[in-house]
Image 1: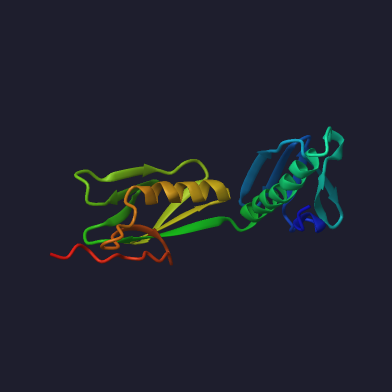
Image 2 (image 1 turned 90 degrees about the vertical axis):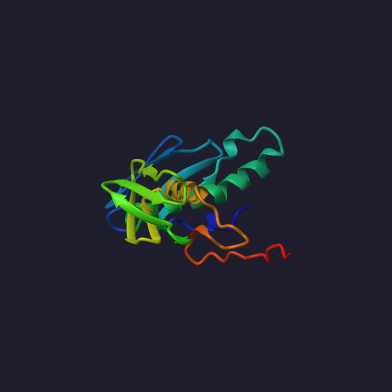
Length: 184
């Protein structure tokens, strides 16, 4: 069994959690998140917070206990991320390395010049905002941890760092080990 479920998920002031069967809805100052879960766990709201408990009602064979144990810690982390998202939010920072590579913001659209014959235009999905503090820096912000990470990964995929020169889009603080090129 996961050690995470031995303690409750703390609910800060201003955050409201509604449990409707297997669906958890978290409302906070930054917005609202909704997630539907499989019936392997039960959510119980008490005075000290939200508890994630194994649902032993669905156990039919001995091997089901393992499956339930796997899902308890995962669902605890997902709900905790929802609570953090509606209170503080999440952000991913990207760096652009390379001569002539730059980013700019046009309205809500992110425009990247990455050495292609055309600029790359990326629309922000609902719930995501882009910031460009410098021409070689991008900040992706939102309340959904998964969506922020996925959008940042999609931006990075346009020009992944080259191992011979180090050029490309990388996460802030990411170390790209460069190789020695071919010698003639």
